[in-house]
Length: 260
Image 1 (cartoon, helix red, strand yellow):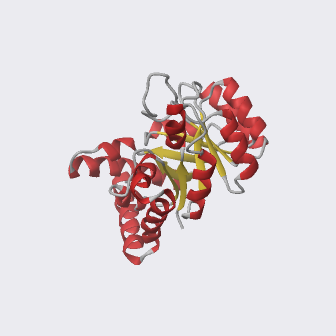
Image 2: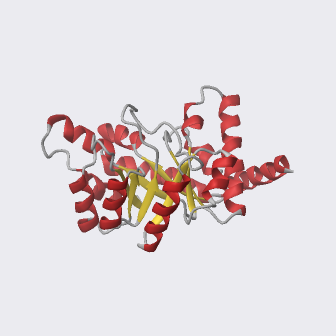
């Protein structure tokens, strides 16, 4: 079963717009779990534009389910993560002026920062995941850290405006997935995924987890959060059907041929 991590950052964005307590991110997380989420994802940004320190503390204390903390390699954020000890920490790039995360983290350029942080996370019993573009050089650099999991940035695939472009980006992701499988890296995927573009991603060989936030929270405005998560969970469950097993095998074989 492919795991579903639900990102609830934008519930906190709505709360912060009025400066009050509603809607409550913790309640949203609990509803997401009722809908079938495997874990809850939150991004503690340096500017605290949505999720705040107290939100993370409450979720760690009260959620009773796996917590995935998306975080930059800022030293203050890293110290916070080590203190809170979420089940998983996903290292992501961060720029104050961006609306949302625009690319994977540059492991090559930031290796001297990333390697010790991922090692400290591992020593603390926190699963360290590197959020990276499906780029061979970046994936090779991941092997120089103690992280044994990557989350492929699917933004370019999600933004594709036609089928040839979408297929091109999916091919890049398939090659990256094969690299992960060959090198013992657990495979996650996320960014820009929705109810409409998810199916291609489900065909990635070895895919273990997807993280989805905006699409689910947007649908929840009309259906309610629990139902929105359940509908996404139902789409993921199709990955266990014969049709998708065969499709995943075909991608694996095609990718192997291209590598040769």
